[in-house]
Length: 194
Image (tube, rainbow, N blue to C red; front, top):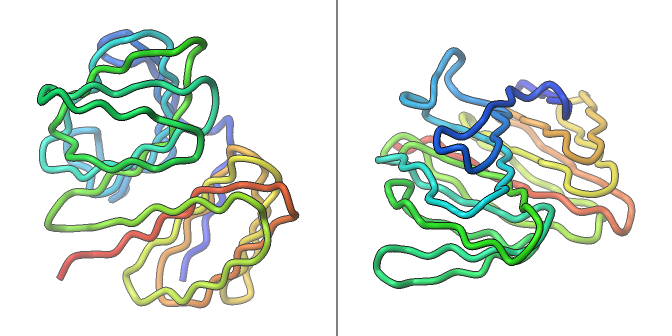
């Protein structure tokens, strides 16, 4: 079992290729992976102007608005999705929806997994409390603290995550996530495909 606390401010920050915002790579797996060959990518993105998302062929992607104003995603087939705070939305990473801003810049948390190797499920926990999880071997659990402070406990190890910090737990273990009322977090469970 591995428990890793990644602090806000240590993420790898860079401009989007199209200049439409800033991205912060939280974690790429395996170690040493790039944007072209990752199996798992966690990132924060700031959308500061309207424009297309980057394409990631072969990737399943879930984005969740974590700050700023809501925005709309427009897809080539005419589908529109309004992104509201803490409402995860999943789509094929090869698609390049165009973001339409309602007002101020927006910030979202991205979970991406390479299809055929990994799959993921994203949930949001809005009012603190306690979450008990049993992780199977090979499973990765991710907690991204959106508001408040969270504590992650696994196999006798404890991590204290403040807002915008991320905890990654790998391996077979029991995992308890706890926070005071009013806290919010994104929890992602990533499983290797057989």
